[in-house]
Length: 127
Image (cartoon, rainbow, N blue to C red; front, top):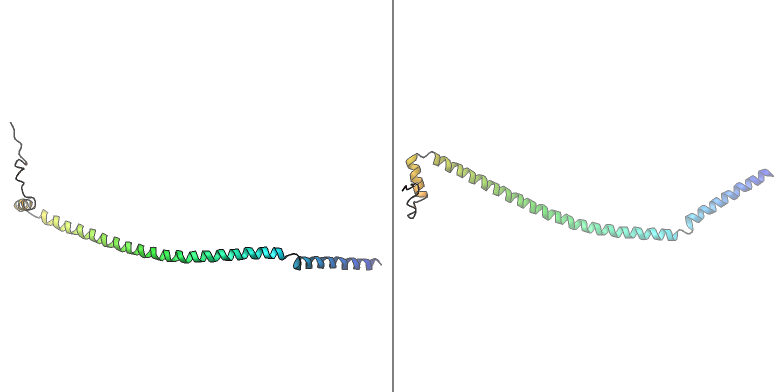
């Protein structure tokens, strides 16, 4: 008789566990599921918004890269102009340094003609 009562207890415990599992699986979870479905749909909307912003940012990045490339090219052109100016002045100075005194004086007189108002340029009068 004790063996039958143990079997009945096992059967009763198994039935209670099964009914509890069925209740948790199929009953009372609709609010829980609806709440998480609402959260999931909200997150999906936010993801779509972020993807739209991402597309806009990618186009902005492309425009800025083009602008940076054009500025880099402008810098290279300016740097080349600067190098050309330095080279031309080096040649110019080299030509001037090779002049003798008379040629140098003639060069200065053609470059900087004497001003008629400035007659005492390097002489100091002593009284």
